[in-house]
Length: 114
Image 1 (cartoon, rainbow, N blue to C red):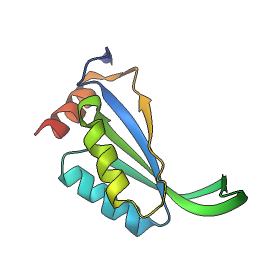
Image 2: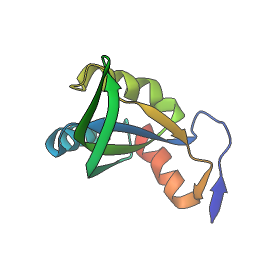
Image 3: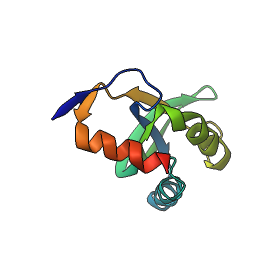
Image 4: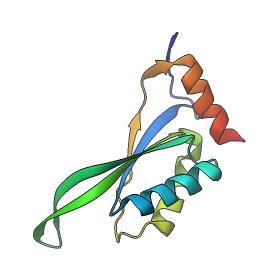
């Protein structure tokens, strides 16, 4: 059954970040799941990022990490990302989940609340 989420503090969200390599992304993902800052982290290698940094257009291979968490854990997850990510300015994009399977969303919420 699909659940339509409201704007409550326990609303599930996606957090996207990128890493330079698979090992770093996996280590980060494992730590945030073990710390219950995220219920799940998908590590997706093989991305090519083209971006402007310090006035130059750059192109790098990166690994995308998609984290499932709740609004209640966002501040802690972002703080952990800022403190532990190797980039000078790590990507931290938060996307709302408008709806999803009730069982899965319940699992996300339960996995990050302890």
